[in-house]
Length: 319
Length: 262
Image 1 (cartoon, each protein chain N blue to C red):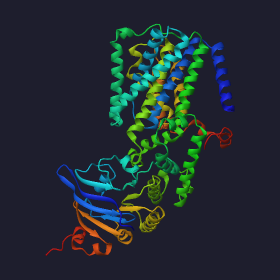
Image 2: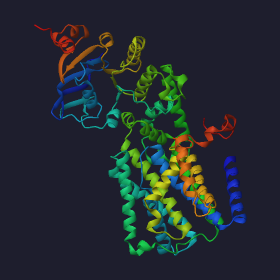
Image 3: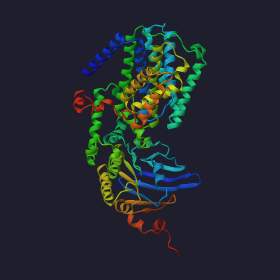
Image 4: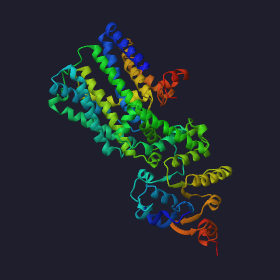
């Protein structure tokens, strides 16, 4: 209990600091970090834990974003109070879509699965592109935002916290073990009596749900979404964050999200003359990471696993 | 050994392209029997295994396990019926710890993926913690029996070859089978390790009241521990009987050593 109170105080403190001492540019970056973290966690659950390569998370994110935006504007009277309802609906729609996609596609593995999920994301994008009711290529405008940064921040942190807790609890429980087993050797896992197709489907559905959650919040954070916001490159960015943090390391995903959200923004100021150093430093960092830590920053392990044993027992962390 | 037949293979055939890999093979295993399945390379032993354990669909014939036809079940369903197997090339969850390997096998019967299971693990309820604790205890007990408990938190892939073989057998036992199928357990083992394996197989057969089907190349091992032996050659059964009788059959000698030129 105590650790949750400490966590809450820290979060509130950070919120107040961000709110009162820093400008809205930095605040906005902070929120995008949280969205990236949710997306990376979502992808990590299916790609990191179960080793099922998905390139369709931008599509799921788009589903969440558009659902949430449309529901809020058309059905809930365009009120900021109802943003959480819309976001939850978006997550559910993405979850259902994820389940439907997983029905045929989890007969496939590796590259083939990546192609199917990529195809799904493109279908979603193209459908939105041609759907004039939600703005088509012009995008969907004037989505209700939170009136105040602290509200937005609080909701974002809550979403991230829920995402992390759900995935973490599942990771350390029976379901996580099943996913690891599939990751390691799916044939052996099947021989142990595990229905692997079903397990992968559940994992993908959960992952989709949280991708939709992140997408829903994304819509209400920016206030404007367009099909262009959910292109292939977004899926790849999420993948980069996940891989950098370590496939299977949930806390790693959050840290990598922070790194890869703040770093490009910080590098923006390192421009000298006409040369955009950002485009040089950023890829070099990624290449270095792949050489020095090919399994990502934290591999499969969580950050807290490096804590000294004394603190672990004190905080009730299983060794 | 009782006379009850636990697994019955009837007229089993499978064809890969033009090759009839297994051709009308028929044999039975009685309860609590240790049956050896031998034959030269390419005789179809592993193919028979793979059909029994649900990886290949037989083209024709029946596989009857405990009075139930299991031809069309998936590998997972076959396991749930009480039939566990190991692999010729060890297939452990290499980056998981030794105990996690066993836990994964143990938990399949406890967590069947009902909504209740999910909610308990999401909210980390005391019920969930109790189940985890029970599983952990059960896994440790099982590892203890095989003197693997000291490696509990080691990565499975870091164990010695012999220990990995042993762990694979323990993991198969953790699914609580009635019939255990061992696919060349002595492959790649030295003399001492094979001796230990021999003891281990006898031990688990008594301790867990198992029926064992053993595929093996190591003749000495097969001849000393099997109650009965079935010999395959080129997809066909050529002999079925007690080890001492099998040894002297001309067909078997020919399959292994070739024909003496006349």
